[in-house]
View 1 (cartoon, rainbow, N blue to C red):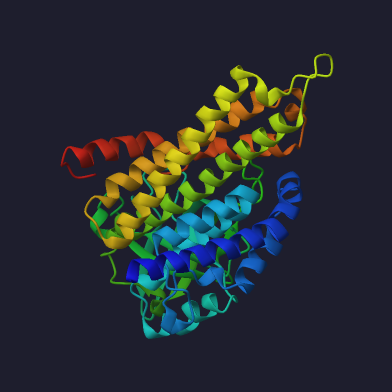
View 2: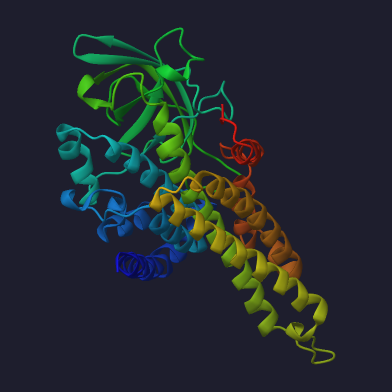
Length: 388
């Protein structure tokens, strides 16, 4: 019975996400992309519908959902607008980190406002000098009486300059290579000393405001410490890792699905004027559509399976989640490339829907953990070896 209740809940969320995606996200997607515009309207619509509290416990007004719901919702949003889906995904992962060991103070000041649609959060983990190894921050924190002082620089902070708070990782000075000192702190957007650097002008995902930030002696109350000081590397691998990978897998699955649907619509509608031959009847084209459909459906089933294993706490979940993200990235790039070929010269016009999908898909391989790193982790997991 519990499984049926979960399935019903996720199905309802899927339907609600589809409506918002079609009514709001799809309408604004071209403008968000062309103007590199943070998707305020789309995120507001999601907040009004309660989606920003996807991972907030029900007792605090949230939806209390897990990885499967995240995968399903991110897919529907990614199908309409990759940038909005990315912003939502980063907020969702950060929210799960906040909720993991929130104090009573943090519940009232962060989790309830998020559940009520009044607060957006995000992750600030990546740094210029650490590349894909986001779990080895070089940003420093120093404890001073009732607060921490933060110094350093973060890069690719999604929702940068627009979120109300950020989950920041830092270590004590001199402990940059010791994973046992990994610490997460909630940084409020209005904290003095937080400086946003150049605006995001990306090749794809142009509306996600993925900006670098400098921490210039930022003071943060000790009440904003997440969990125990120096004992938070588990966040990286038990929460950030699975939730981030599932969120991004959902986003890029949605992009691949949108490219497939546009291809099908094109081939169904077009024919050669001189012969009257419909494009959909040409075996060389329909065979490629079959391959696209197989890839998209196969990776959807893998992702949903992996997310379900994660929700169950299965020991097989990490390998399945690594594999899902690897396969989604390869699928998104391959399917959007094939879609551009099958839909012909019209798709190569600037600012077309397929060109946006093609550009958005390219980031699937390089977002940390990259496909290369994930394959290493998957191999080590299968072989019974530790990740680090």
